[in-house]
Length: 185
Length: 155
Image (cartoon, rainbow over all chains, first blue to last red; front, top):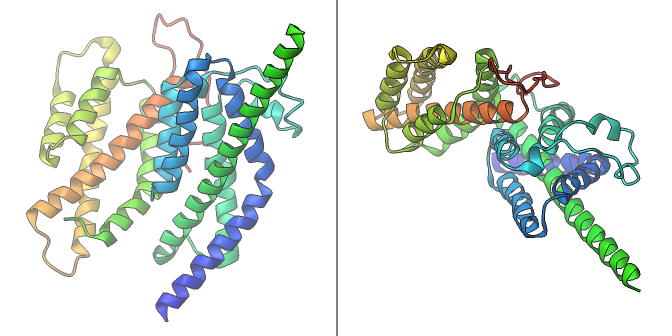
């Protein structure tokens, strides 16, 4: 019986997280574009390393049992990798970023934007989902479920972000190749 | 050996308590730790050292009299960390007390070290992040401007 209840709770959590993921799809798209822009100015031979960092972010999100591990990873990457800590001018990106929040991102680095989105916006979403599912953070027995909600949200966000990052990178590469071809003709 | 239930509890405590406490801790120190101190703490917390060895190291660093005036925040960091380790020891003992059977001395030591490692990991990540985002005030003679990061600490 307890096993069934746990299974039912897990399904409820996944359903609620999937619904929330639909709603933050636009934001994860922005973050993916920001990630692509953050590494755009790096040399070609460094792009594979940046792709590896996105893979690293995905790996930690998918495998860790702690939200704080993901946040620590973002912090360390922000400290070590130029693409994560460099504050980039968003000029030229605003055609891609339709959301007015693009102005909020100006003057801030990718690592900071991602960390704050998880700590504030995603945390709020987590609280809302927990409220709707009767998961009470004041109740010790409910804390594992709350942690699971937050982790699932982070995983959805990172998956979407990385897909948008890969798509944006390949689109820009295609555009560059096309422009180069036209110039040569 | 730490039990699976204990591991799950530590994961939760790490997220809801240790992480925000570590962020507040670093922000209250408000000066960056140099790489030598970071490496020292990492080596002693991640290696095969005991909790006692970690506490002794922290105590030693706090009591050293060879710090320069520009490094005054470092012994203060270790003083506060020493207090924190005592608190974490008590948390580990509380967790151990929940076991239905007697906890061995080794298991108790391991629990304490796990708590300490979690906290130090969060501390050092926050130190790195605050350095990268120029959240620490500039050291005298440092021409870089500083800015206050947006938002509060932790979650």
